[in-house]
Image 1 (cartoon, helix red, strand yellow):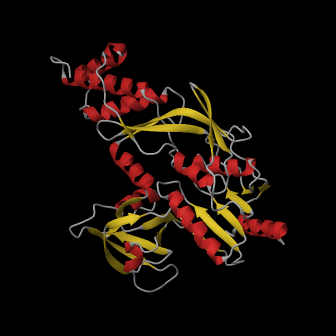
Image 2 (cartoon, rainbow, N blue to C red; image 1 turned 60 degrees about the horizontal axis):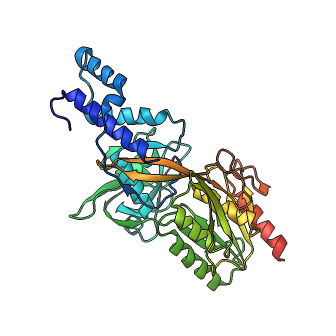
Image 3 (spheres, helix red, strand yellow; image 1 turned 90 degrees about the vertical axis):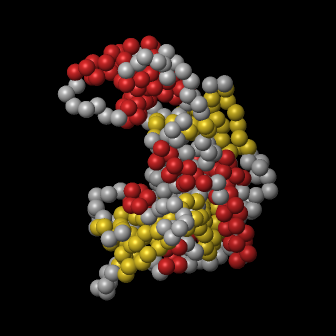
Length: 400
Protein backbone atom coordinates (compact mmCIF):
# COMPACT_ATOMS: atom_id res chain seq x y z
CA UNK A 1 0.00 0.00 0.00
CA UNK A 2 1.35 3.44 -0.89
CA UNK A 3 2.05 5.74 2.12
CA UNK A 4 0.45 9.14 2.53
CA UNK A 5 -2.92 8.30 0.95
CA UNK A 6 -6.36 9.02 2.38
CA UNK A 7 -8.68 6.13 3.21
CA UNK A 8 -10.63 6.44 -0.02
CA UNK A 9 -7.44 6.84 -2.05
CA UNK A 10 -6.30 3.54 -0.54
CA UNK A 11 -9.45 1.75 -1.68
CA UNK A 12 -8.99 3.24 -5.14
CA UNK A 13 -5.47 1.85 -5.19
CA UNK A 14 -6.85 -1.51 -4.08
CA UNK A 15 -9.48 -1.42 -6.82
CA UNK A 16 -6.83 -0.71 -9.44
CA UNK A 17 -4.70 -3.60 -8.22
CA UNK A 18 -7.68 -5.98 -8.02
CA UNK A 19 -9.09 -5.02 -11.41
CA UNK A 20 -5.78 -5.22 -13.23
CA UNK A 21 -4.96 -8.53 -11.61
CA UNK A 22 -8.33 -9.87 -12.80
CA UNK A 23 -7.74 -8.52 -16.31
CA UNK A 24 -4.37 -10.22 -16.46
CA UNK A 25 -5.92 -13.60 -15.64
CA UNK A 26 -9.14 -14.71 -17.44
CA UNK A 27 -12.67 -15.82 -15.90
CA UNK A 28 -16.35 -17.30 -16.13
CA UNK A 29 -19.30 -19.64 -15.30
CA UNK A 30 -23.08 -19.11 -14.96
CA UNK A 31 -24.32 -22.66 -15.15
CA UNK A 32 -21.37 -24.95 -14.76
CA UNK A 33 -17.71 -24.91 -13.95
CA UNK A 34 -15.44 -26.54 -16.43
CA UNK A 35 -11.88 -26.54 -15.07
CA UNK A 36 -10.92 -28.66 -12.10
CA UNK A 37 -10.45 -26.72 -8.86
CA UNK A 38 -9.30 -23.17 -8.23
CA UNK A 39 -6.03 -21.47 -9.08
CA UNK A 40 -4.54 -19.32 -6.31
CA UNK A 41 -3.27 -15.93 -7.48
CA UNK A 42 -1.39 -13.09 -5.84
CA UNK A 43 -2.24 -9.45 -6.54
CA UNK A 44 0.56 -7.29 -7.89
CA UNK A 45 1.12 -3.57 -7.44
CA UNK A 46 -0.21 -1.35 -10.25
CA UNK A 47 -0.32 2.38 -10.74
CA UNK A 48 -3.90 3.54 -10.21
CA UNK A 49 -3.23 6.51 -12.50
CA UNK A 50 -4.54 4.21 -15.23
CA UNK A 51 -7.97 4.88 -13.69
CA UNK A 52 -7.94 8.68 -13.27
CA UNK A 53 -11.73 9.08 -13.51
CA UNK A 54 -12.29 6.43 -10.86
CA UNK A 55 -9.86 8.21 -8.57
CA UNK A 56 -11.52 11.54 -9.34
CA UNK A 57 -15.00 10.21 -8.53
CA UNK A 58 -13.74 8.64 -5.30
CA UNK A 59 -12.27 11.94 -4.18
CA UNK A 60 -15.50 13.80 -4.96
CA UNK A 61 -17.57 11.26 -3.04
CA UNK A 62 -15.28 11.50 -0.06
CA UNK A 63 -15.51 15.28 -0.10
CA UNK A 64 -19.21 15.82 -0.81
CA UNK A 65 -21.38 12.69 -0.39
CA UNK A 66 -24.14 13.27 2.17
CA UNK A 67 -24.18 9.82 3.73
CA UNK A 68 -21.55 7.42 4.94
CA UNK A 69 -19.78 5.57 2.15
CA UNK A 70 -19.97 1.75 2.07
CA UNK A 71 -17.04 -0.26 3.45
CA UNK A 72 -13.90 -0.25 1.32
CA UNK A 73 -14.19 -3.94 0.40
CA UNK A 74 -17.78 -3.49 -0.75
CA UNK A 75 -16.72 -0.58 -3.00
CA UNK A 76 -13.83 -2.66 -4.32
CA UNK A 77 -16.12 -5.58 -5.19
CA UNK A 78 -18.57 -3.24 -6.93
CA UNK A 79 -15.77 -1.71 -9.03
CA UNK A 80 -14.51 -5.16 -10.07
CA UNK A 81 -18.01 -6.25 -11.11
CA UNK A 82 -18.43 -3.08 -13.13
CA UNK A 83 -15.08 -3.62 -14.83
CA UNK A 84 -15.97 -7.17 -15.83
CA UNK A 85 -19.44 -6.08 -16.94
CA UNK A 86 -17.83 -4.07 -19.73
CA UNK A 87 -16.62 -7.33 -21.32
CA UNK A 88 -20.15 -8.34 -22.44
CA UNK A 89 -19.40 -11.95 -21.51
CA UNK A 90 -21.91 -13.43 -19.04
CA UNK A 91 -19.50 -16.25 -18.14
CA UNK A 92 -16.69 -13.94 -17.00
CA UNK A 93 -17.55 -12.68 -13.54
CA UNK A 94 -16.52 -12.13 -9.94
CA UNK A 95 -17.98 -13.79 -6.84
CA UNK A 96 -17.43 -13.04 -3.17
CA UNK A 97 -15.90 -15.44 -0.61
CA UNK A 98 -19.06 -17.24 0.73
CA UNK A 99 -20.20 -18.20 -2.76
CA UNK A 100 -16.65 -19.19 -3.73
CA UNK A 101 -16.55 -21.57 -0.77
CA UNK A 102 -19.93 -23.05 -1.71
CA UNK A 103 -18.71 -23.66 -5.28
CA UNK A 104 -15.59 -25.40 -4.00
CA UNK A 105 -17.75 -27.69 -1.87
CA UNK A 106 -20.01 -28.54 -4.79
CA UNK A 107 -17.05 -29.32 -7.05
CA UNK A 108 -15.46 -31.49 -4.38
CA UNK A 109 -18.73 -33.36 -3.94
CA UNK A 110 -18.79 -33.03 -0.15
CA UNK A 111 -19.65 -30.53 2.58
CA UNK A 112 -20.66 -30.27 6.22
CA UNK A 113 -24.42 -30.45 6.72
CA UNK A 114 -27.41 -32.76 7.09
CA UNK A 115 -27.44 -34.21 3.56
CA UNK A 116 -30.58 -33.16 1.72
CA UNK A 117 -31.65 -31.65 -1.56
CA UNK A 118 -34.03 -28.71 -1.23
CA UNK A 119 -36.67 -28.08 -3.89
CA UNK A 120 -39.33 -25.35 -4.19
CA UNK A 121 -42.70 -26.72 -5.29
CA UNK A 122 -45.51 -24.92 -7.11
CA UNK A 123 -47.25 -24.13 -3.81
CA UNK A 124 -44.18 -22.24 -2.57
CA UNK A 125 -43.23 -24.93 -0.06
CA UNK A 126 -39.71 -26.25 0.49
CA UNK A 127 -39.48 -29.98 -0.12
CA UNK A 128 -36.64 -32.18 1.17
CA UNK A 129 -35.01 -35.17 -0.51
CA UNK A 130 -32.43 -36.81 1.80
CA UNK A 131 -29.28 -38.39 0.41
CA UNK A 132 -29.03 -42.14 0.84
CA UNK A 133 -27.11 -43.02 4.04
CA UNK A 134 -26.86 -39.32 4.96
CA UNK A 135 -27.59 -37.87 8.44
CA UNK A 136 -31.04 -36.55 7.46
CA UNK A 137 -32.13 -39.96 6.14
CA UNK A 138 -30.76 -41.67 9.26
CA UNK A 139 -32.72 -39.24 11.45
CA UNK A 140 -36.00 -40.11 9.72
CA UNK A 141 -36.42 -37.47 7.01
CA UNK A 142 -38.27 -39.00 4.04
CA UNK A 143 -38.45 -38.07 0.36
CA UNK A 144 -41.01 -35.31 -0.13
CA UNK A 145 -41.14 -34.09 3.47
CA UNK A 146 -42.16 -30.42 3.69
CA UNK A 147 -39.67 -28.22 5.56
CA UNK A 148 -41.57 -25.98 7.99
CA UNK A 149 -38.94 -24.34 10.21
CA UNK A 150 -35.19 -24.16 10.75
CA UNK A 151 -34.14 -23.57 14.37
CA UNK A 152 -37.73 -22.52 15.16
CA UNK A 153 -37.68 -19.86 12.43
CA UNK A 154 -40.35 -19.92 9.74
CA UNK A 155 -39.16 -19.78 6.14
CA UNK A 156 -39.78 -16.99 3.67
CA UNK A 157 -41.68 -18.55 0.72
CA UNK A 158 -39.88 -16.13 -1.62
CA UNK A 159 -36.44 -17.35 -0.55
CA UNK A 160 -34.36 -19.31 -3.06
CA UNK A 161 -33.85 -23.03 -2.42
CA UNK A 162 -30.05 -22.66 -2.52
CA UNK A 163 -30.23 -20.11 0.31
CA UNK A 164 -32.35 -22.49 2.40
CA UNK A 165 -29.93 -25.29 1.56
CA UNK A 166 -27.02 -23.26 2.96
CA UNK A 167 -28.99 -22.83 6.22
CA UNK A 168 -28.84 -26.63 6.55
CA UNK A 169 -25.05 -26.70 6.31
CA UNK A 170 -22.40 -25.96 8.87
CA UNK A 171 -19.09 -26.84 10.47
CA UNK A 172 -18.77 -30.44 11.61
CA UNK A 173 -17.89 -31.20 15.24
CA UNK A 174 -18.64 -30.29 18.88
CA UNK A 175 -22.29 -31.29 18.53
CA UNK A 176 -23.06 -28.60 15.96
CA UNK A 177 -26.26 -29.13 14.02
CA UNK A 178 -29.67 -27.79 13.20
CA UNK A 179 -33.22 -28.33 14.43
CA UNK A 180 -35.83 -28.69 11.69
CA UNK A 181 -39.56 -29.30 11.69
CA UNK A 182 -41.09 -31.21 8.78
CA UNK A 183 -44.43 -32.61 7.80
CA UNK A 184 -45.47 -35.35 5.40
CA UNK A 185 -47.27 -33.82 2.40
CA UNK A 186 -51.08 -34.15 2.50
CA UNK A 187 -50.79 -35.42 6.05
CA UNK A 188 -52.94 -34.01 8.85
CA UNK A 189 -50.60 -35.37 11.53
CA UNK A 190 -48.52 -33.11 13.75
CA UNK A 191 -45.20 -31.80 12.42
CA UNK A 192 -42.16 -33.89 13.27
CA UNK A 193 -39.15 -32.16 14.81
CA UNK A 194 -35.54 -33.36 14.59
CA UNK A 195 -32.18 -32.15 15.78
CA UNK A 196 -29.69 -33.34 13.17
CA UNK A 197 -25.97 -33.06 13.84
CA UNK A 198 -23.81 -31.81 10.98
CA UNK A 199 -21.68 -34.49 9.36
CA UNK A 200 -19.42 -34.67 6.33
CA UNK A 201 -21.91 -35.32 3.54
CA UNK A 202 -20.82 -37.06 0.36
CA UNK A 203 -23.07 -35.60 -2.32
CA UNK A 204 -23.96 -38.18 -4.97
CA UNK A 205 -23.46 -36.97 -8.50
CA UNK A 206 -24.68 -40.22 -10.09
CA UNK A 207 -27.79 -42.28 -9.28
CA UNK A 208 -28.76 -45.48 -11.04
CA UNK A 209 -31.17 -48.41 -11.07
CA UNK A 210 -32.71 -50.98 -13.40
CA UNK A 211 -35.92 -49.38 -14.70
CA UNK A 212 -39.12 -50.45 -12.97
CA UNK A 213 -40.87 -50.42 -16.34
CA UNK A 214 -38.32 -52.89 -17.77
CA UNK A 215 -35.51 -54.24 -15.55
CA UNK A 216 -33.51 -55.19 -18.66
CA UNK A 217 -32.87 -51.46 -19.20
CA UNK A 218 -30.40 -49.61 -16.97
CA UNK A 219 -31.06 -46.01 -15.93
CA UNK A 220 -28.16 -43.70 -15.00
CA UNK A 221 -28.65 -40.06 -14.02
CA UNK A 222 -25.61 -37.77 -13.84
CA UNK A 223 -26.68 -34.78 -11.74
CA UNK A 224 -23.42 -32.84 -12.10
CA UNK A 225 -19.75 -33.45 -12.89
CA UNK A 226 -17.78 -33.43 -9.63
CA UNK A 227 -14.44 -34.93 -8.65
CA UNK A 228 -16.19 -38.19 -7.73
CA UNK A 229 -18.39 -38.60 -10.82
CA UNK A 230 -16.12 -40.94 -12.86
CA UNK A 231 -15.77 -43.41 -9.97
CA UNK A 232 -19.50 -43.24 -9.24
CA UNK A 233 -20.30 -43.86 -12.91
CA UNK A 234 -18.00 -46.88 -13.06
CA UNK A 235 -19.70 -48.26 -9.95
CA UNK A 236 -23.08 -47.69 -11.58
CA UNK A 237 -22.05 -49.45 -14.80
CA UNK A 238 -20.54 -52.40 -12.92
CA UNK A 239 -23.66 -52.73 -10.79
CA UNK A 240 -26.02 -52.56 -13.77
CA UNK A 241 -23.89 -54.99 -15.78
CA UNK A 242 -24.13 -57.48 -12.90
CA UNK A 243 -27.93 -57.25 -13.00
CA UNK A 244 -27.84 -58.18 -16.70
CA UNK A 245 -29.18 -54.99 -18.31
CA UNK A 246 -29.04 -55.02 -22.11
CA UNK A 247 -29.32 -51.27 -22.85
CA UNK A 248 -28.74 -47.97 -21.09
CA UNK A 249 -30.53 -44.65 -20.59
CA UNK A 250 -28.16 -41.81 -19.62
CA UNK A 251 -30.15 -38.94 -18.10
CA UNK A 252 -28.42 -35.55 -18.14
CA UNK A 253 -31.53 -33.39 -17.93
CA UNK A 254 -30.88 -30.46 -15.62
CA UNK A 255 -27.14 -31.20 -15.53
CA UNK A 256 -25.58 -27.73 -15.60
CA UNK A 257 -22.05 -28.99 -16.14
CA UNK A 258 -19.11 -29.29 -13.81
CA UNK A 259 -15.47 -30.27 -14.00
CA UNK A 260 -14.08 -30.61 -17.51
CA UNK A 261 -11.59 -33.44 -17.04
CA UNK A 262 -14.17 -35.50 -15.19
CA UNK A 263 -16.64 -35.06 -18.06
CA UNK A 264 -13.99 -36.44 -20.44
CA UNK A 265 -13.56 -39.46 -18.16
CA UNK A 266 -17.33 -39.96 -18.23
CA UNK A 267 -17.40 -39.78 -22.03
CA UNK A 268 -14.57 -42.33 -22.13
CA UNK A 269 -16.81 -44.92 -20.46
CA UNK A 270 -19.06 -44.81 -23.55
CA UNK A 271 -16.58 -43.84 -26.31
CA UNK A 272 -13.46 -45.77 -27.26
CA UNK A 273 -10.45 -43.68 -28.29
CA UNK A 274 -12.33 -41.15 -30.46
CA UNK A 275 -12.53 -37.34 -30.35
CA UNK A 276 -14.71 -36.00 -27.53
CA UNK A 277 -14.44 -32.31 -28.45
CA UNK A 278 -12.31 -29.64 -30.10
CA UNK A 279 -11.15 -26.60 -28.12
CA UNK A 280 -10.26 -23.24 -29.66
CA UNK A 281 -7.93 -20.97 -27.67
CA UNK A 282 -5.85 -17.89 -28.43
CA UNK A 283 -2.94 -20.14 -29.31
CA UNK A 284 -4.89 -22.33 -31.73
CA UNK A 285 -7.04 -25.46 -31.73
CA UNK A 286 -6.59 -28.72 -29.83
CA UNK A 287 -8.59 -31.94 -29.67
CA UNK A 288 -9.44 -34.11 -26.67
CA UNK A 289 -9.69 -37.86 -27.25
CA UNK A 290 -11.46 -40.44 -25.09
CA UNK A 291 -9.35 -43.10 -23.44
CA UNK A 292 -9.91 -46.75 -24.36
CA UNK A 293 -11.40 -49.61 -22.36
CA UNK A 294 -14.59 -48.04 -20.99
CA UNK A 295 -17.19 -50.24 -19.28
CA UNK A 296 -20.22 -48.84 -21.13
CA UNK A 297 -19.14 -49.43 -24.72
CA UNK A 298 -21.21 -52.39 -25.83
CA UNK A 299 -24.84 -51.60 -25.00
CA UNK A 300 -27.39 -49.50 -26.95
CA UNK A 301 -27.55 -46.03 -25.45
CA UNK A 302 -30.04 -43.16 -25.29
CA UNK A 303 -29.20 -39.76 -23.75
CA UNK A 304 -31.95 -37.62 -22.23
CA UNK A 305 -31.41 -33.83 -22.46
CA UNK A 306 -33.37 -30.66 -21.86
CA UNK A 307 -32.95 -26.89 -21.59
CA UNK A 308 -31.07 -27.39 -18.33
CA UNK A 309 -28.42 -29.58 -19.98
CA UNK A 310 -25.43 -27.28 -20.30
CA UNK A 311 -21.68 -26.86 -20.46
CA UNK A 312 -19.74 -30.10 -19.86
CA UNK A 313 -22.99 -32.10 -20.04
CA UNK A 314 -23.51 -30.80 -23.59
CA UNK A 315 -19.96 -31.89 -24.46
CA UNK A 316 -20.66 -35.47 -23.38
CA UNK A 317 -24.06 -35.58 -25.09
CA UNK A 318 -22.68 -34.05 -28.30
CA UNK A 319 -19.77 -36.49 -28.43
CA UNK A 320 -22.02 -39.52 -27.91
CA UNK A 321 -24.34 -38.37 -30.69
CA UNK A 322 -21.67 -37.23 -33.18
CA UNK A 323 -19.68 -40.44 -32.78
CA UNK A 324 -22.79 -42.52 -33.52
CA UNK A 325 -22.79 -44.05 -30.05
CA UNK A 326 -26.35 -43.05 -29.12
CA UNK A 327 -29.19 -40.63 -29.81
CA UNK A 328 -30.52 -37.61 -27.90
CA UNK A 329 -34.14 -37.43 -26.73
CA UNK A 330 -35.76 -34.41 -25.09
CA UNK A 331 -35.51 -30.66 -25.65
CA UNK A 332 -32.93 -28.26 -27.11
CA UNK A 333 -30.01 -27.93 -24.70
CA UNK A 334 -28.89 -24.67 -23.10
CA UNK A 335 -25.98 -23.76 -25.36
CA UNK A 336 -22.94 -23.02 -23.20
CA UNK A 337 -19.87 -23.79 -25.27
CA UNK A 338 -17.06 -21.93 -23.53
CA UNK A 339 -14.32 -22.98 -21.12
CA UNK A 340 -13.74 -21.12 -17.88
CA UNK A 341 -10.75 -20.90 -15.56
CA UNK A 342 -11.46 -20.23 -11.87
CA UNK A 343 -8.94 -18.11 -9.96
CA UNK A 344 -9.14 -17.82 -6.18
CA UNK A 345 -8.08 -14.31 -5.09
CA UNK A 346 -6.20 -13.28 -1.97
CA UNK A 347 -9.35 -12.74 0.16
CA UNK A 348 -10.93 -16.08 -0.94
CA UNK A 349 -13.19 -14.41 -3.47
CA UNK A 350 -12.76 -15.72 -7.00
CA UNK A 351 -12.89 -14.69 -10.61
CA UNK A 352 -14.06 -16.86 -13.51
CA UNK A 353 -12.52 -16.15 -16.91
CA UNK A 354 -13.52 -17.44 -20.34
CA UNK A 355 -10.39 -18.93 -21.90
CA UNK A 356 -11.60 -21.13 -24.79
CA UNK A 357 -14.57 -22.34 -26.84
CA UNK A 358 -15.75 -25.88 -27.49
CA UNK A 359 -16.91 -27.67 -30.62
CA UNK A 360 -18.37 -31.17 -30.83
CA UNK A 361 -16.67 -33.87 -32.97
CA UNK A 362 -18.90 -32.79 -35.89
CA UNK A 363 -17.78 -29.19 -35.17
CA UNK A 364 -21.20 -28.13 -33.94
CA UNK A 365 -20.98 -24.70 -32.28
CA UNK A 366 -22.50 -25.11 -28.82
CA UNK A 367 -22.29 -21.55 -27.51
CA UNK A 368 -25.62 -19.82 -27.91
CA UNK A 369 -27.03 -22.72 -29.92
CA UNK A 370 -27.06 -25.93 -27.93
CA UNK A 371 -27.85 -29.39 -29.26
CA UNK A 372 -31.03 -30.29 -31.14
CA UNK A 373 -32.32 -33.72 -30.02
CA UNK A 374 -32.73 -36.53 -32.54
CA UNK A 375 -36.22 -37.03 -31.07
CA UNK A 376 -37.74 -33.79 -29.78
CA UNK A 377 -40.31 -34.04 -27.01
CA UNK A 378 -42.77 -31.59 -25.47
CA UNK A 379 -42.76 -31.93 -21.65
CA UNK A 380 -46.02 -33.34 -20.28
CA UNK A 381 -48.13 -30.83 -18.35
CA UNK A 382 -49.12 -33.48 -15.82
CA UNK A 383 -45.49 -34.22 -14.91
CA UNK A 384 -45.27 -37.60 -16.59
CA UNK A 385 -41.78 -38.50 -17.78
CA UNK A 386 -42.55 -38.71 -21.48
CA UNK A 387 -38.85 -38.49 -22.42
CA UNK A 388 -38.01 -41.61 -20.44
CA UNK A 389 -41.04 -43.36 -21.92
CA UNK A 390 -39.85 -42.51 -25.43
CA UNK A 391 -36.35 -43.76 -24.60
CA UNK A 392 -37.79 -47.10 -23.48
CA UNK A 393 -39.83 -47.40 -26.67
CA UNK A 394 -36.82 -46.55 -28.82
CA UNK A 395 -34.56 -49.08 -27.09
CA UNK A 396 -37.21 -51.79 -27.44
CA UNK A 397 -37.49 -50.96 -31.13
CA UNK A 398 -33.78 -51.37 -31.84
CA UNK A 399 -33.15 -54.35 -29.54
CA UNK A 400 -36.25 -56.55 -30.06
